[in-house]
Length: 136
Image 1 (cartoon, helix red, strand yellow):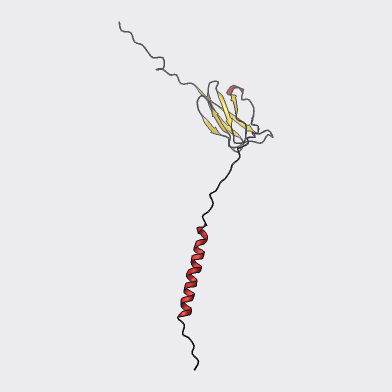
Image 2: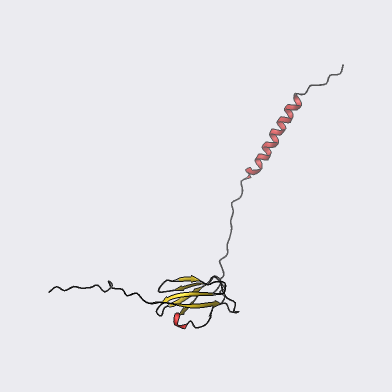
């Protein structure tokens, strides 16, 4: 009799995908547009619209991450999303920026001096070629 073995990772049963409508607001109650809504297990991602709402897809009891520039990132279990998600302001200070520029070479005014010298030579040549007045 032959026996066959089956590796444990060979059979994968797809998990059921569900969806839920979420609304994201700030602490004043204003809807937040452009919030990144990401389900951590299924890697589904979307962005909230102008009304702060989005439809998120998830599998099972995974966590949903809400991220927005200038706001604290919030991770909420999908089964705890029953009302509006409130994102608080995030105050992050950036390091100081120092801008250093190299000094400009002094050749930028050299063309002006060259123009003056050439112009002076041309004026001198023209004044030497003019006929001289002779009194009789």
